[in-house]
Length: 323
Image (tube, rainbow, N blue to C red):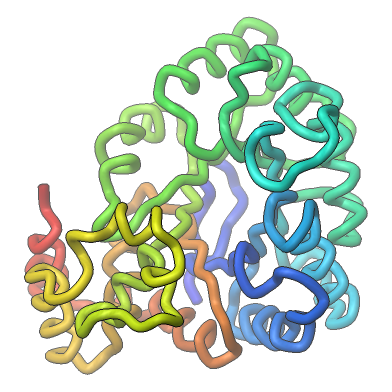
């Protein structure tokens, strides 16, 4: 495993991190989740991504991950965890005061996440989505207070726009507040625009790190949909996912060509896709999901794959997805 600085901070995250959106739904996932987390840590992963909106109910995924961490007991200085808070209309139904980027929910959500994870502080704390009902000034002050209290180390955003970043940085400069250090957004070979075009100027000018979700675009970049779908796939079960990715289902020429390159160098298409994503120097860490120990072990190999790819392979593969 290789490690990268999170933007301009000194915090170094593993190039592959483990997400808990899926397969950490409730106690029924405990045994498998434990094997996944153990394997991730054993293979050099040092960042566990959580959110209050993950799991079968509010905070359930964080609670399960925390239960596992307490049992396997890795040293606290060997891993980082993140929590995320969400607007009231996003995710599970809950009381009106248990959502939004207002000061109350930011503080309550942090305390609840720390309790669920079983830690005294969160390494990263994200605004999971923008909140149109809360002024960004209130959010910036609340996050700064948590840093000063030692409850979080860094704060970040998820799916924010350049205009929102501009307002945040103006507020933080005006009042001498802590600025966000990291943005979490989608990034993969077939979903590059948000990072490479829309956010690139602000990322570079402000030194923002990127923790990227869906680096395999929901399995599309594994090649598993090249021969069609079956009833047990996300494409079959989730209509919005199927509609959003229709052009990449079946014998998509770009994906067929990528599979041929993966076969040529004798590594799985999924690992090649991750290794190529790591060629973007704006990325701090790729958040990978896993359904088994074997899968996360295989995924972690992509970090070293990225170092071994020849310039010719990189050029040919990335050219397939160039705008």
